[in-house]
Image (tube, rainbow, N blue to C red):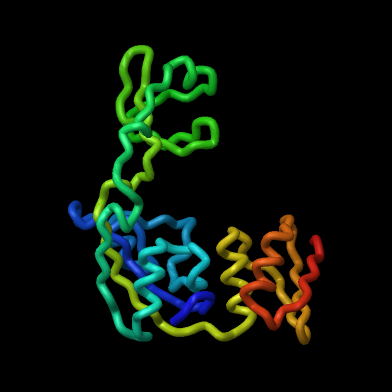
Length: 209
């Protein structure tokens, strides 16, 4: 496996010290661990190596792994989501929440000034919000298997669009031209990425439905 290869993987992510599964591609595992989300589709995921669609440390490990063999890979905080930064624990006035009609409580996930955080403590007049990544400071463990190398052009394009949260679009490929029918706007950044990662595609046309 090398950079820009498309591969299909199945995985389960666990916080090691808590033995807590927090993400998986397996619906049965999700239900067994009470993390099942009916809005989510549980199935193997197609990714492109080197495109930061997964943890960079995990990407590096996968480049040396075999197809159809299951691996358990452990990453300490410095190779996962970083160590806790005390400076990212910030005091926010209660009035700030009231102005947005938010009642804060410990554990609440919020977006303040375009920064995602978790409320840690609430006291009269002030709230402490943690803007560290939710998995910072934790050792994580991936159970992962590479199912296959993906060489089908349409599957590759679909995986790129999925990474931008553009799902189930109508695609047609003729020679070196890609036609996409979509209700949503598709930026030049996305079409450029398709041409960059799939050299057979020279031109992308978007039809707004």
